[in-house]
Image 1 (cartoon, rainbow, N blue to C red):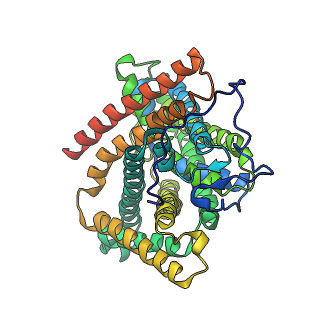
Image 2 (image 1 turned 120 degrees about the horizontal axis):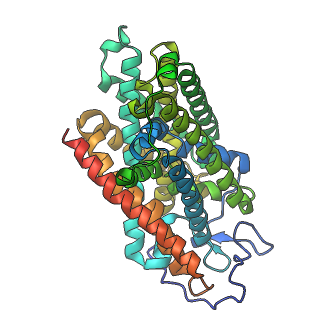
Image 3 (image 1 turned 90 degrees about the vertical axis):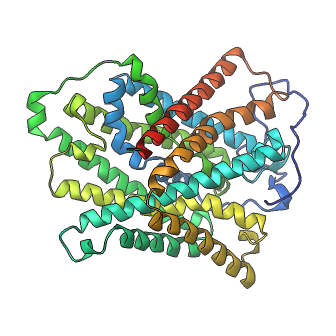
Length: 437
């Protein structure tokens, strides 16, 4: 870790105006905000760049299961999507606020926030959950890319090479990018193209669904709400909004951090819009006959093949963006980060570290047969805690002595924690069930 220093829970005088943020939050003032250990805050990108990063990371393969989530919970799932979007935006915003909990100093990462709130053990737990979740997701993405490429090349010479071969190729492509891309700013083009592939996939799904005459005439039945399955539907939808593990690095890369809240809100609203579009069209057309992923319900043809290719491109483009949060923190811990990038030895160590971690992920993805089934079990635990529960706990712990929380704020935070715990229980149970199928 970057420092052995332990941030004890902060005791600061309570401010009279409980609704105002610290002056340093979201803006570099005449007295500059510096990161812990006096490391400079690297700021290259603008709000548009941050927008693409957020959308690329958030809007992924989860889109494909949203119509089925409405099948499980009924049309009430539309409200669940809106609720999940609001929670995700709030959780991401308060996480960044926690970075500025110390006067004139910006904490560097999510684990440092946990350390400031709960001591060294908090930092260790969050660091493990964060790194495991991101590395695991990339591993699953590599497996998914291998499966999709093998399927797309079925009937050709390339289709005879097998899933393992194409998974290895996918890992190699990700490795090439992460070895040469040092910062979040360096992978902005990947986020732009990753977002465009997602939009293209959404357009294809909507167009095929609307033009499917067979189901347009029969109109399969739908239900307004399924109370008994509401927690399952809500949990599957909430997992589609995970992504805040990367937010500290993205916010740090912005030239104008004060635009973070607005940028995050706009990006989350855009993601919610495309989620609502796919879920509404998919469930509206196919009703209770809809399958997961939605591509299985669409009429076969070249358009579905293109959509499948877009999914493959997205997971490959998103993987390096996700990994930046792991590598940047690990390199800062070893004092070989961007600040030391002028040293040849530091650059070499960075490449070796990234190659080693990528090699471990690739090994498990390619050679461990149940990897893509085991990871979701632990991933459900990690995602539920670090996306919903821990940001709220840190926020209240760090700011309760600085401002007065209203009853409504406590109630809202309690709701978010409850949603996180529901996701934890249901996500874990479903992942275990899938493992034994």
